[in-house]
Length: 150
Image 1 (tube, rainbow, N blue to C red):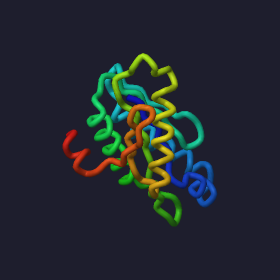
Image 2: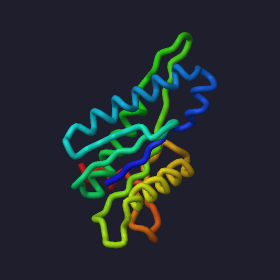
Image 3: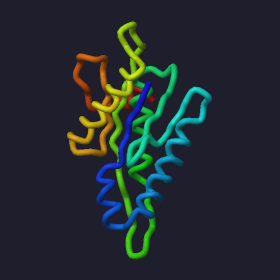
Image 4: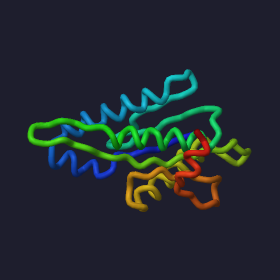
């Protein structure tokens, strides 16, 4: 399972509050991801800019999507205090999770997760989108999907 996630409207945070505040937002997301990636087969890293990636091995798609939704909800509750303001921000997440097939390459999951991330942003941001195998449409998580996976 592979995730790609990005901070929604990150440029606005940097432009309005400065790059120091943007860096603090990045650190908060890193801390949040580390809380959800504690097993030996779970990894999270910043890719650059406002984008992060996470890899979770041996996890069914519904559970991967449910955890992504929990991360999204956790980040939405974060607050960064600056003089005269409280900064709140959201993330969008694209999730690619399926049993690899012979035609899958090393980049198949990353590309699918990245496309799902762009779909989540296109839907208004602050969403989790689950990519299906190549050639299938992405689906936005419904509350029923997330609840059923917990």
